[in-house]
Image 1 (cartoon, one colour):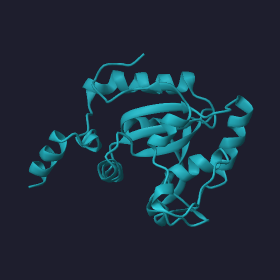
Image 2 (cartoon, helix red, strand yellow):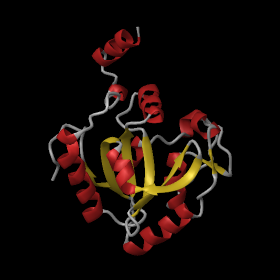
Image 3 (cartoon, rainbow, N blue to C red):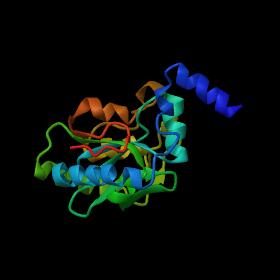
Length: 194
């Protein structure tokens, strides 16, 4: 039954289904390594990373919002980590882990980024570590001391969060339109990206 529903949605152009079936294994190793190289070569502290992840939460967000993207986070280029909000709260995670579990990855330079502003943005994001996940914020009912993924990235750059109403929920795709794209892997296909 779910398979038939999936085919029906895919046939109707549900881009949220892209990435539901993970593409992993040796056939994709060179491509994934090219993504890691691109982010490490072009990325800077405080930059945004937007992904379509191979996780159950990623599937849920991408399908319910009919989007190519499911997650946003802040890059710590020096430590090769990211600051992200997941269901257990705001955490610092390995960059390689994010990329290994991504169907697509986009590196975005926020407006006004310089090494100095990026360092300050990263410091603001790191101050949120340990805060709880903002489930209400996903529906337009934000909590001032809880954070969903996009709120962490917004807060890092001192952009407004905590606005009431579902029309004020910031989707990860927003970041790809807000800043300058430095790298877009496109969907995982087994071909290394430049």
